[in-house]
Image (cartoon, rainbow, N blue to C red; front, side):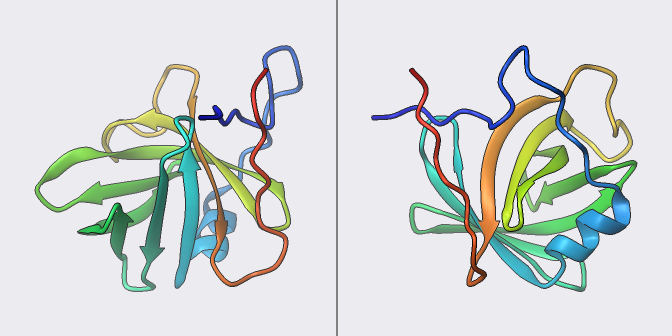
Length: 134
């Protein structure tokens, strides 16, 4: 299985982070189809009312999303796996997500954000291209 890596590799320039309004505009009312570094696929729908649905391997988890201190926060119902992520736009319809903090209160976090996943808006042209590591 191929490993999927971020578009910004070590030694290259830093990602350009989306700001609060840009994150909300890009994601509100849309579904992202993405992949983690392991290659595992997921989808996540961001409803305009702040609710979300995370889908992976036939399972669906509900929760809520918000934009806080330059991060996209996904907090799941009865599941501690969520967190807050810095978001970078790689192309017109390709976003990379970098873990920044576990909670909205801790956002944006103090450590360097860590690349987590890449995804694109379902149904829109110019989706992400997976990049194989060497």
